[in-house]
Image (cartoon, rainbow, N blue to C red):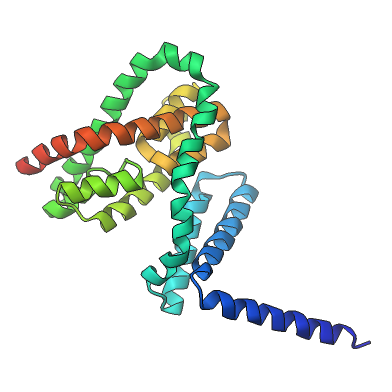
Length: 252
């Protein structure tokens, strides 16, 4: 009758051993990140992919609460979580696969997309600087706001170059992506924009990687053009934003 008790004790001992091993190594941050994101994505799927249940937003809240509750420094957590950060590069390169399948359409639409890219990127920068200035933000804060619609690694480099705070920029980039992914569908419907190419390109320009992930959940075509916009926006921003933002910052 009690045969299950020794087995339960062995299982508990093994779990304890696993916990001791993980807690003493950087793998704890990676393990917790993957488990939290998996749970958040399950909740996202069960909500019918509701924009407000964005798994990135849920993961950020839960992980932040865990770090605060356990008194774990972010640097300690990132020792393990940096493996996920490293995979951002290969994941971005992998976006070229669905984009290649849309090559014929891309060749027809390159001029309007180029115009949309320039206008969208500059508009995001100018409005961010304008709002920061209107609210009385410091120049360092405004400089951190300027590249908020660019993918995080590029945005942090731009912020540092123009006198911003890279860590603040990283937070603003994530917030921008979450807000863009959550509000995009309603805004597109309000404006009666139904073309998945237009939706994807706009979402990738404004909401970078998080917006692109959301676009892929809608359709592969929408995700492909969102990925294209994200990559081109990062390239254009790295060249143009230090000049444009630097000039605007002298005026505020």
